[in-house]
Every structure is written in C-alpha cells, then in structure tokens.
Amino acid sequence: MVMVNHDNMMPSPADPTRIDVHASPEIRYWVQELGRSAVQIKEAVRAVGLLVSGVRVQLREQSLYRLR
Image (cartoon, rainbow, N blue to C red; front, side, top):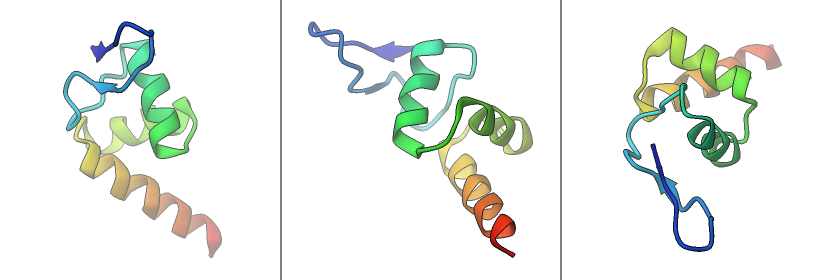
C-alpha cells in the first residue's frame, strides 16, 4: 500500500523497506525510484524477495552483467 497525500502525489510506499508487486501504485513508485521497468522490478523481487535492499543489489548486478 502506498501512502497518498491530499494532492494525489505518491511520496513513498507504506513500508519503504518492501516492494508490494501486487499494488499498482506501489510498482509505479518503485519504477520511478529505481529507474527500472515494472517487469525488471518484478523479476528482481521474484529472484531475491520483497526487501528493497536485495532488489537494488539484484538490479545493480543485472546491469553490470549486461555490460560484459
């Protein structure tokens, strides 16, 4: 669940340490925050779990692997 302010802006997810892949507003937030597509984020969550720290590492490693 994403906390929405009165201007309908998404300041941050309800739990900033976890990614809820079943909540569209939250996925939109993480797409913007991480600079990756929803598909990439969902694949990373599937690979390492819901914790943002693990997802960040996974996405970073994927980027480095593609450069080789």
